[in-house]
Length: 425
Ligand code: GUN
Ligand code: ZN
Image (cartoon, rainbow, N blue to C red; front, side, top):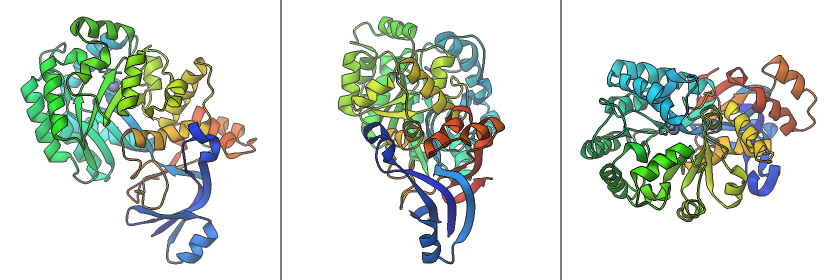
């Protein structure tokens, strides 16, 4: 039993709805058997649990670990590749790199590296695309099991518009995905996600095959990309001339539903927004990617007020950082360009509870509450001289936190806990 002392940040509701009072600060969190057992005043928890080992983090912030709702771990090594937009970025950088994952040793090496990088940034859960190679899925689930991390991942399916060596077929995509689902879904803290890359790289038959796999396994999530760039949408229109819109290419093949995770979702039509809202699918905002690849501005304020379920993500390696702090900063900047200043409480909520809700796991992770899994990050709010001098003049917690959101990186991550065990720091 461990008692962590610090500024324990947790949410009792959604700050987009209730404002900053949706966030609360407590003094201590008690961890036992991988779970959060209690939060509250330090004196009371110490008195009630005299046998607990005390770990005093002083004024550091103790939060739920970050949840990154959309990543491509195979793109770890091509992060920050210069000068391309989506389709030529995929062809120039992504596909050649993903080809290398036919080599299991290479896949294992990158999976381990990705786990190190993401944990050292305080991210304790994520949902990742793998490559078309089943071994790339095995490599990631195996790497995550070493730290007992709660992750989601799936084989990326593509049967057209990708190079030879990076294409499967409708049948092999179905068979491989079904086999990997049986092998990994619900094993430890792993969950399998059915993963068609996006409509341009799947035939109708492949989309339909994955739609039927999802219908047979409705407790699985399904992840894909939607309306990231204007050229991409035009390409989808030419490939699916009878579809009403981009979303319809998924919908007509059984790939629209409440466990659907739609990455980017920038250039949505009103019909698409309405359908996504009706089925309560999740939209995943990837702000560093959207600026880096030049995709556009996600309409956070209007989508959130319309009631959409929204998560936040790095989109490694289209995104330019492994850090959810950096990702919150980019979400702030993207919203500013649409004349909205997102409150730091809303940004923090998106990176924790919001992403956990998007993954339909907010009863397990993403918040500090009794019964939740003990995935925690301890954050130094004065991790660099620039941040220290800015936060020193703060008169409330959010003024103290905001410089770390805007300027923080892995140096701010003092300790990381996964399933009740320290894995960093
Ligand atoms: N659309 C289809 N595949 C990808 C990908 O790997 N990254 C991004 N950002 N968009 C995509
Ligand atoms: Zn992506």
